[in-house]
Length: 88
Image 1: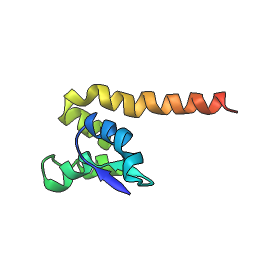
Image 2: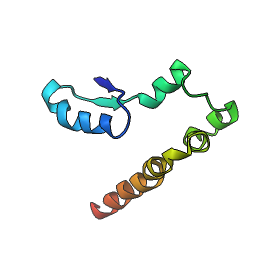
Image 3: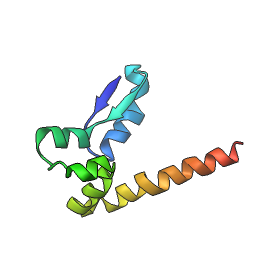
Image 4: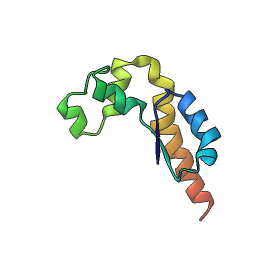
């Protein structure tokens, strides 16, 4: 397993290009987690964590992430759902 923290979209491109080369079975982007662990980004309030709305917290504190968050939270799940319907 490989953890990649290069920032989007660089990390996704790196994984796409090099995952077959390094022969890892899995890769995971961890940039956001490292931002929290290092203190670079303030942790969300406990209520936000309990409601599992960290993405909303990141949107409010980092509005430049709007497009990425929208794609991750709304577009990607919709595409997966529609693909599932198509394959059944």
